Length: 266
Image (tube, rainbow, N blue to C red):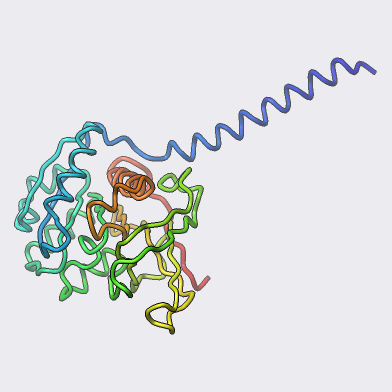
């Protein structure tokens, strides 16, 4: 028996296997589109307590470093500008509470249905326009409470194979709001948080999504509940989740539609 040949063949097989594992990892990581050259619309305003102007300044700097073409507006009226809405790839909204007119909402909704991505965080996306249930239907969830106000809490990554969460480990947010959400139980949840009984005993061990993705029409929707204060994104993991979520949402027009259906009742 030629043991030398057997050893060589074994080494080749191991090498091929390792290459395959590496390829799988790279493929997972590579599912995100590029932001370079993408047209991004940032819309901000609403409740001043969330410091929307500071948020926009912080995030726009990161986006420009990625090579985006950026339009910034402090008016919801831009949603009625069909020329602009037809030209963009992704909308980042940071508008807490407030009201949106019927024409403004239709402009936003129609753009998303056609394939414009929509991404955002905290109250800027999931506590906007409380009187508009159609808007909440599009986002996939709505804020309802933040027990204890500004506290420390853990974020758990539940889908480590998704391109948005790839390589990100569980982390802790410090001195900020832990959002309790009412959500569509069919969204694809990427990260969660567990509540304690320190404020409301009846919610002990309840698990609520922190990050999710879904579709509305042909448009990709990404939401992250972190972001009560712009400084929250000095936490590296939170920054990665937000930027990767925006990047994923920017691919609606260019990338195949994913299956984001993850019903909790199956």
